[in-house]
Image (cartoon, rainbow, N blue to C red; front, side, top):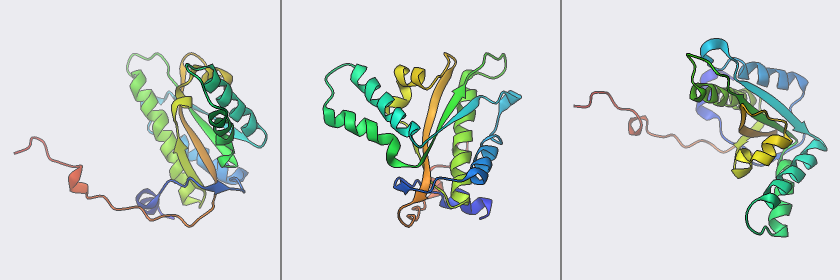
Length: 187
């Protein structure tokens, strides 16, 4: 698949099943991530892979974080939280590692980690791997961050769910470029 095809036709694939990407495919996913724009060559990212029984442990962490939050949580909501990581055979947690730097503000470093995330999605699509970027409130939960071993200078950018698409991929709806692009100064 050429680069433009991947860029123009990548779609989120929320329904995933086995098999997960193999070792060679994963190598390409992470090599693509490491080519993201990176002002200052800080490499402000790291990645956790979660698969097998570790997905159940992550689900339990999700449920504990929800239960510790304010308000009453139903058993149904806790069961849903436990099942979330089981929606794909492989999860990749993308983490931004923000470093103090005189010329590279934190926002640029977080954006760079977001670009690395997008590169993984594009590399997955190019290899025929189904993938979807998820966040949700648990991506911003301090208990989840601690449970995953994040430092005080780190934040979750994405939970990437990867596997084999259960269905044929949908076709992206073309958007009119003119709705999003204008010249400056406008006349």
